[in-house]
Amino acid sequence: MNKLKFSILIGACAIMATACEDKLEEPQKGVYSIDTFYKTDDDAQNALNGMYEIFEKSITNANVNGIHNAFFFTYNLCGDDMYAAGEFYGDNDFMAQLNEFRYASDHGDLTDMYKSFYRIIYGANLIINNVGSDGSELSAVQKRCVGEARVIRAYAHMMLAIVWNDPPKITEVLTGSEVITNSDHNELLTWCGDECMAVVDDLDERQGTSDKDGTVKVTKGFAQFVAGKSYMFAGEFDKSKSALKPLVESTNYALVPGERIGETFLKMGDGNEEQIMSANFAYNSGSSDWNGIIDRSNWMYSNIMNWRSGHMAGSPEEIQMGWGGLGLRLDWCRDFLNNDCNTKIPEDADLDDFATTLVYEKDADKDKRWRRKAWMKHVNEALYEMSYGAKKDLKKDGTPLTREEKEADNKRGIETYLYAYTYFWEYKRQARIEELYPGKDNVSLRNVLLARLGEAYLLYAEACARTNDNDGLKYLNAIQNRAGSATVSSELTLDAVKQEKRFELFAEGCRWADMVRWSIQDNDLSVFDRLKDNGTNIPELYDAMFDANGPEKGTGDVEGKHRFYIVRKNPNGSNPTGLDASKSDQLNKYRYFPIPFSEIQVNPNIKQHEGWTTAETTEE
Image (cartoon, one colour):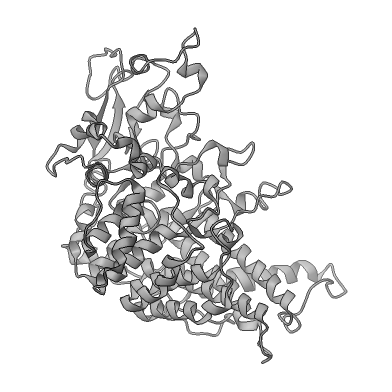
């Protein structure tokens, strides 16, 4: 923590002083002293605007690593639903290290996000510590500004606690003399909830479901969301339910209808009726590449996340093709299809075989399975049902290619192979062409979604299930019905809520934190069962049309139509990967992220987590 403070605050001031010392003989003009700032409503609002800029940049582009946003990867890759993919083994290895549990305490994304949340906390503390510091009574505007800062500070602490367990609680602008130590996990999270509830009445409300501005600033709804989630992770289930109830009952928010379910995660859905809070990207045509565009956007998101275009003969025109960063695990796909499409694929089915039979196509209601269609695409859907543009979808006479002609078309398909891909491809978080910055295919202009009503419904349903309150059933059912799912619960059970969270909140930064929480709150280590083999039996998806000398054929003959098959490989060899919760050393080490190596170096009062040596880094 001290390192963060010195590098960002003291270091910046020192640079400014050195640069100005020889060049300015007069006091700098247009600069306010901290003793004269924070006095008026305008001062408070201007300081709040500055805090939001720190907040937005720290969420969208925390990139000491340089080429991507760390927020998504930190909170998603340790789960049991996806592979870290890429062009080949070793490509985007910062992702695979998390996914395969072979990261160290100097991991770039973990370090970036840890420090980024403390940057946010610093920006919030500047307001909280200084507005009204002269003892004067706060105006309504000042109360609102301080309230928004307290909620943002609580959110940052909450996000740290749910994956780092016991990060320091920082409530003051640091001077350099403080002793910074670990916090208590549950006490910190309870404090986060209490902070939000203490100021909820000072905050603005979103003004109805069409109020887009009310989704990019702290409102009562976001304070209630952060409070409810914080209390949930602290095990304060009654308090979680009480905080969330006015939010789920509010008319300022609504679930989008099923046919629009996918838009909430795209630019077209920014500010829609379901969104509670997003880190806002404000488009400014006068911004330069490196000042206002790249540093405030999801830079390189589309490159890393989107399907691997370089290994394909053609690509759907709606998708910005990329580096193939995420693959879907077939055991997750099987369970999702069984839940949403009633496919009844048995547990012991050959996972590399069931998807080739396209069992989901036998579902009479498949066109109404809104969530299934928005969350994933089967390889056949990607190749034959998505548009590749007129030149590839039409014959010379202008008539559309038939399905049979597309199956024999060498202008689509997989020319080499897709590493860590199976028959189903992640579609929910794919960047679309229309959301990219004009002329820049590596800058996504979408806001970063932080809270939505769908998650609030499921948090409330879980709190109700844990307190024997059947009121949560209607909110669980609302999620299931909106999804078009074949599974609609007739009673509220904790298992039903957990299952629904696994599918509804896929790739939203919830799964790993929930798995860790459930392993502790419910004393249930079985939640980690699917993580034992992470890093082994990695799939590679091949297309027999192009695979003249591939691992299956080996004959040199090329088939006349597309046929897909999977080859499993173990690129990590004998190196240990995965998380086996039956082994206490692995469980203690990987259940929470390590405090970043750089922080332990600078602040010896912070204790490293069990299982990690103080100096353990990637190089070791």
